[in-house]
Length: 431
Ligand code: SF4
Image (tube, rainbow, N blue to C red):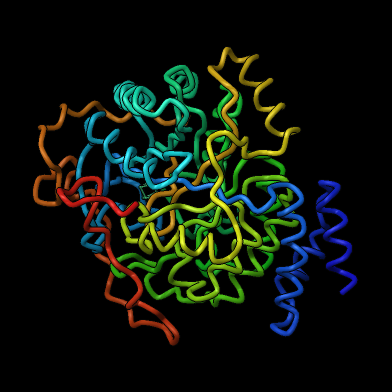
């Protein structure tokens, strides 16, 4: 296909495709799918070899969010029955992170539900970052706490955060259909704050929320313009009890075309296969490794992923290798640029690459222009489960309950499992 030859050439030159070319990738026929994967795979290997970076999610604070992101099981009034707990203590979070590192994770992503952190939350996360780095000197830490207020990005960077994740999720045109409590512009602002503070920016999308091909191309081109170091690609996990529970639009073939399009538009960026890969790609997951150079190990924020040992076996069986801490994830030109910004900002290091999250849970957001959330009292110690959650949100503020949806044709609701192990429970994590 002439289109694919053109896209490979452009990818190797770090030149973006045209919008029409990106749309054409999404419109390719099933007969051409392996050719599309092979072409995008050439670009992936040119910049990242056969390495796969492993990332591990630690949900520091689960549920009870006052925002209304339609895809999210942690939104206020969610009927999903997920684990709900307040902030993990630094040592609890460090223990959870340690399981991921022991499983091969090079990056730990510290995520908290909510619109954005208070200054006290930032202090708490700073202590957590320090606790993790005391035990695992080489691990990269990405914070994902929502919309940032002035000065918070710098404080997180000074505490040792290597990266900050904040996803755009969908196109600017459709953002208001997905979330009404903050704006697309709020999200862009926070990503820019993270970059300005010298952290590696991570920002991605969620596919499968009912968007058009044009929307997908729009958000990926917006991400290219924003220029994060990593782009997580989530496939919507339609969790029962959320407004998008009936959105089962994705097929394995569609997921592969989306990943290929992202690789062509963002050729030298860490493209992360994120939430939803198990339920939407299913047995085609290994093909996605030819497109993405990064995945999450084990479970997601509120749903369970496949067993960590199966992730490792999949990588080996597909002929790829887990990236070690002695290797810089990003191509030299990107790593050098990031280090230069970090040095100019008084940053702490040259940590490479980006982060990701979401997929069945948070793609936290926040708002730099938002008044700070009132401080809440320190939570009691001990294990924090749904039974121990303080009612921090007034019931009258809750949105209407979401009616149970009728599963769409082809829905694989049997593959969606709410997380019941790891952080916030007494059970060992999946790593
Ligand atoms: S995505 Fe983040 S901000 Fe939005 S509802 Fe979920 S936890 Fe809250």
